[in-house]
Image 1 (cartoon, rainbow, N blue to C red):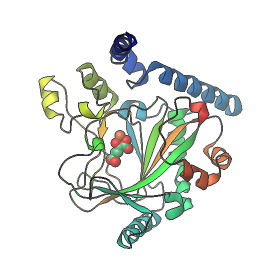
Image 2 (spheres, helix red, strand yellow):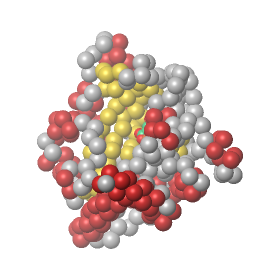
Image 3 (cartoon, rainbow, N blue to C red):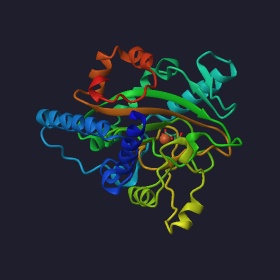
Image 4 (cartoon, rainbow, N blue to C red):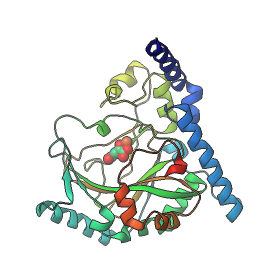
Length: 303
Ligand SMILES: O=C(O)CCC(=O)C(=O)O
Ligand SMILES: [Fe+2]
């Protein structure tokens, strides 16, 4: 009996999470307790920030409507390119810091990138348009939840989950950022995004891209069948540019057709203190690396 009951409770809660009033508010289809935890915490962080600094004099983040924002020249080009060369070197030397994806030949991850490449990568967060861009999104302090680094290789047969149109279905008030180490273009695998209007229109038509089994690689048939526009956005980036994005809007990774793509990826959550102070409290870059890429905690206070 409890199983039957939980089946119905789950079905009802799924129905609620997939109704417009819900996903338009949270930009995800996650459960209510999770969304409420993050919403409350983001509000507290915003209050604390305003109490300390006064009201924030910044326009709304472009991420709110457009999913992603490109910041040019966020990190020195030569340094970005030299880190890419270092990745090539690590791969060629079969260094233990390199882990290949399970699907052979698709991508390589560089473990503990802040130690393996260089801790000055964090300087990207001090670049004014990056710190302002993140502040405009959070409207409070924020902190680094993780930093990863990966190289994507030219197209292979089959598609990884991130190459299917999806929403990460993360809690609200969280975002990610790429620091590009190689050019990201249509040919070299710039991530494609849908803006708010299109993400919501696809959800209203029944596309959620949350679970692996409900994600499509190609949306053109779905778009045609539901009379929806299909107009993915992407930003062409150069080494040293950064792309800040809200991963709850629909997006997909694109395998490069030529060359390879190197990026560092940051994940951010709201915070009561600055990212630098929080990093100190977390045991510096060693502490951050030791935590690795964790699932986002259900309660953001626990991080
Ligand atoms: O690697 C990419 O282009 C996008 C990966 C992705 O889906 C994500 O980081 O959420
Ligand atoms: Fe994603």
